[in-house]
Image 1: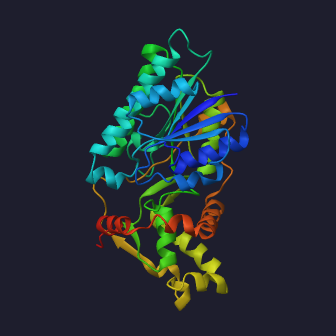
Image 2: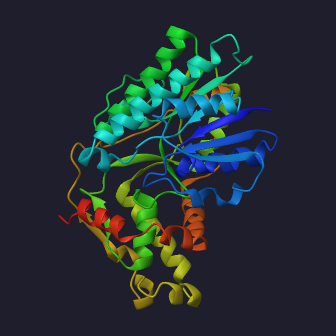
Image 3: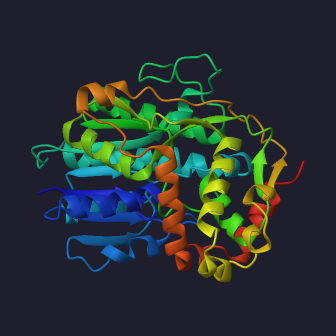
Length: 367
């Protein structure tokens, strides 16, 4: 039996991880620590909120006393660290929160773990797993090899620079103090519970509402896409079987240009709406209601500053050492994500308040 502290567990990937872990390891205890900033949503944990093996704590990872108390009270032996500010656009307009949460917050957790796990009453084994991003590696040209675990860091936004700094801190605590750590760097995630400022849920919500589908620049920027269920399964493998002190890249082997992503999503939505009176009634502003394709909503908008052109993950180490292979291909994963959004309309409608809509309008201006 393990006692886990999951930071950022009310966020997109964190919530999916909590659901996965409690389902697969029902004898373990999971404590979630989340500050419930704009992207944290306690409703994402509603299905597990009454389980005796689960506890939710509303708090900040920068609160050293709170973190230390939780480690002591709950006899935590495993930290899975998701908590982070993660939206590049927000890091450009307000980098301070990214420095505080991603760097200072990670440092606070590491210090608390060092104090609890490397003292006289330390548990027999422990693990601090740090969840990071492929954006720390910078940008690739079309013919460049995919990012591997040995690729030099070259972050290009305040977000990716703050994550790169936290990666280095985690490794330093292993090298300097002997803290048992691991790190995973993932490609772009998508799936259930994703906050609708990110590309795929934003496009789904806007298409259903008949609103513009904003695509940066000429839409040629390329990302590797990883379904969140595959991601959390990969993290499980690294936490349980990965080597201490090592880094593992988790990718989906699905590189696609942003404009192609949006066009594929539009085609999926058109298919779902075809001859479906229920959907036409639920979403009367969707293009299908007036006989138009969803693609008619695509609107090219001004590119964001310093927009990295291509990310790609070489996940061969995960495959060769831990036997990891993605279970979702992109089209299947995208269709299941749209189905989830349609089945959970109350979840995302509760998020789309006026202040959030104002932020979207201010950050996706037309060209």
